[in-house]
Picture 1 (tube, rainbow, N blue to C red):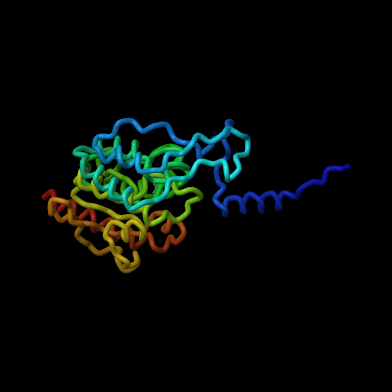
Picture 2: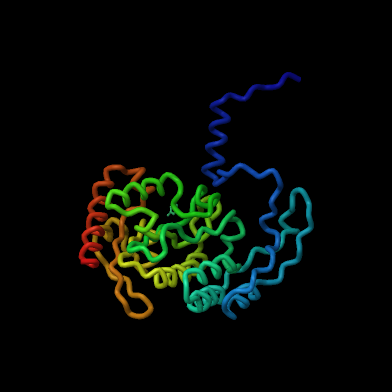
Length: 284
Ligand code: URA
């Protein structure tokens, strides 16, 4: 039987459909069973770590078959409020950024970790005057294990460089989520709450002079508000640290939004000029 040629535009349409469905990664040489039970977590710095991994139901090792059927898969962890409490207790028990990073990397309570390639903790300079908190790692960040390394990160770097700040000494950067949600889906409330527990401690331990929240999701989560980014951006708000210190915080548009809506870059530039002015006042 003669083979039927597939038109290029049909192949392109198929690829686009895959991307729309979140299938945007080439598969590896070896099949990865992302539902398999992960190796036991290394010892965490607090007792809470032990609870975080032990509260998940013990999962039987799934049989190795080329195409695991849904009934043979090990259960994905059930989200329980206890895991959020564990994340909080664990984060609180960390007294340095290095401890916090180790705790996040060892934490097995968040289902997002199961499908991510890497834990994306932070980049830039710990202790820098500015800390930026974005939303979630994307495909590039997941692959490289660093936040904001894709096109929107490159825009962020250029914008920060325009006020004289680089990752090398000028700013420290992270996200409210440490793992890429599969297909960039919206994280569940519990997934967000678990990561946010660590992020709040992250801000306390990094102790920047100024905090920048990039994007509406980050603003809503960190400031615990329902107000939209368009109303929030450009206005200083105060973020209270655990010890009562008030941290000047600037909500601003996410760089991915700016790539889609270049006319808004003018407003983000004003936000960054305000950050520059505040830093000068604080260090005068
Ligand atoms: N968008 C984010 O919010 N964070 C990243 O790390 C990358 C893209």
